Length: 125
Image 1: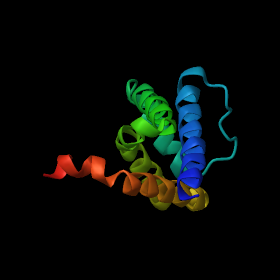
Image 2 (image 1 turned 30 degrees about the horizontal axis):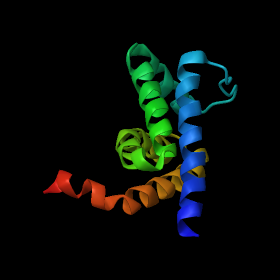
Image 3 (image 1 turned 60 degrees about the vertical axis):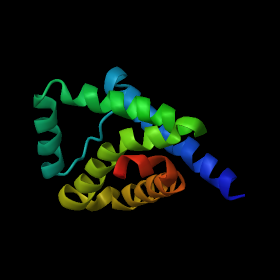
Image 4 (image 1 turned 30 degrees about the vertical axis):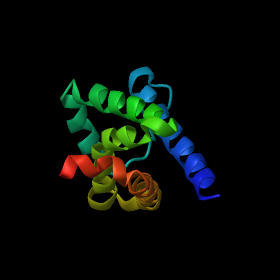
């Protein structure tokens, strides 16, 4: 039962990140019209670095796809980990309106990484 729940959560998690990554290239989801000024300034600063958003989008797309596949889930979690840290930082420091969603995603990421901890052991030896 636990494996089925983890698979469904990893599938939804991976699809969400793959969708976010594709959106950075295809721009099919509109930006919210009402954004806090601090968040707007941060996004404008990120857009000034022309290579950063495509890099994040590529990491989200590849990591999301890898998370969906059980055999490559550990690698996908490693790729998405820095993106997840950035999401948590933005939602705790800049604008707390999405903090609940960010925490739920962080818990799912933590569970995925915990279940694959044996695959990470060689990194720390």
